[in-house]
Length: 102
Image (cartoon, rainbow, N blue to C red; front, side, top):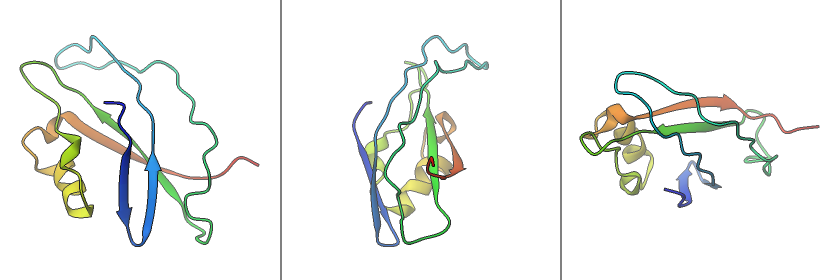
């Protein structure tokens, strides 16, 4: 799970690293992750005024596995991963506006 993911779109290639394990999530329930801090990363698009990042959550169990992130190879398969893949119900993301620390 801790593998790096590289996604290229619109001529931008950025690497996103990070993994936080959240164990023991009850079926049909929820659980918060432990506190984590995103280190102040390099500006993902210095020549653009609007920037964003994604937080991605994957969950699975032996009876209901998480989707295979290796299936993401381009923007089309990225959306398929979250919308229509067999186990897409076990994946979610949240877009956040990026603002570097000053």
